[in-house]
Image (cartoon, rainbow, N blue to C red; front, side):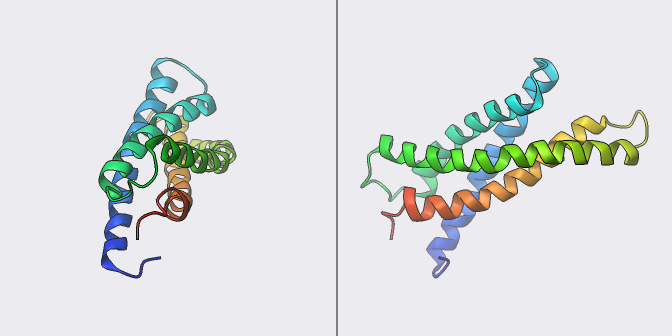
Amino acid sequence: MFKNRKEWTRFFRFAIVGASGAVVDFGILNLFTLIFKVAYVPSSVISFIMAVLNNFLWNRYWTYPDSRSKHVAKQLTQFAIINVVGLAIRTPLLAFLEGVLIKWFTSFLPKGFLSPTLVGHNIGLAIAILVVMLWNYIANRYWTYNDVK
């Protein structure tokens, strides 16, 4: 996959786009859980969808600007399917990590320092984002953007 410099450039752009998606993801997750008091897992689904839309637009127009043989609706559908699989990876991973990390941070963090729930949620989300990013890059490169040489 990483046979040439152009592919490495695409990967780094994909990672930068992913970082912008992570900002969207973290921001919306924390907005919904802390301000709107929505439960963690549903909040993570909402934040994930918003991050996917952000990432699709940036990847289509910046990471893969030479991918125009497919109609935008077809690419968005492919991108969304891959991301739904990513969500299927992410959601149980978050549910598992939530319990483990909150319990660990409850015993680790000094009282009154930071909320173990807040720290556990955000570290769990960071781990899940990294796992899903690898899946997304490989799957999108070989399916959504397979028209790029």
